[in-house]
Length: 271
Ligand SMILES: Nc1ncnc2c1ncn2[C@@H]1O[C@H](COP(=O)(O)OP(=O)(O)O)[C@@H](O)[C@H]1O
Ligand SMILES: [Mg+2]
Image (cartoon, rainbow, N blue to C red; front, side, top):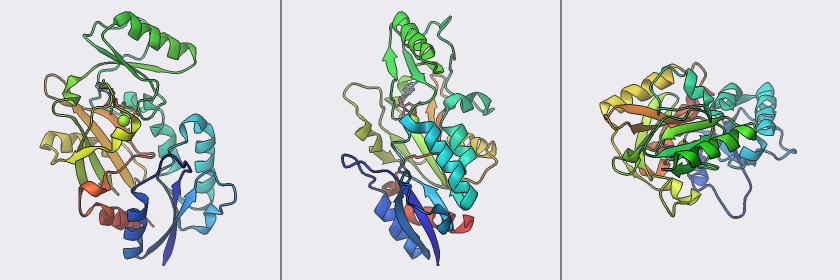
């Protein structure tokens, strides 16, 4: 029997409601899983056949420590997703080099384009942290300038209101095989909090969305136990990438009966 670590975090206020189901599905697939706090210094990661990065949701303020941890773990055992993937994926400047259509993005606080409504976010973020939505170009510029002054890379985008009608579509792939897709709740509407991120509906992706998601996967050479590809549509209807989640995404496993088993099968293949 293989034994794998499920890397999680500790926060009494927040919890990972996918963990127990994942561990149960691993067991069914002949993999003994143990949840471990990623920043617990007493854990011997090399004792595991693989370490699976999951709900490490407190890494954001300690990104350098987190990436150093990932490299250290990888010297002793298999890390999924690999450290190089985590490093590139936690900084959204990877979107510039992807070679696939992305949400139109202006990467400097200067010479902002004229758009009806703006989203301004830092390249290193999660859960829409330090992200604003505004129709005021001056306010967008000021937020972008403040991010840049703090040494952060600002991303200025048009607000795509399709996230409220058609919604944002997330496609889940385990070991590069499609598992399921969901339509996610828009995050930049009044009253939304981080907790709303787990709200979704199952959805069958359109052929053009599947095609784009597969192009994205083909652009990433490393092993990918899990990949969540978040897509939206431009006003002209064409699909674009909002974000690729390869680090600590919520996987919406409860939205598809086979999803937990799909993830376990993918892990077995990669051991
Ligand atoms: N240009 C945009 N237009 C509309 N909504 C956006 C835009 N950018 C971000 N959002 C909303 O904010 C959420 C978070 O932004 P995202 O780029 O995915 O960063 P992260 O999830 O890492 O915080 C998205 O899921 C979406 O709901
Ligand atoms: Mg996102």
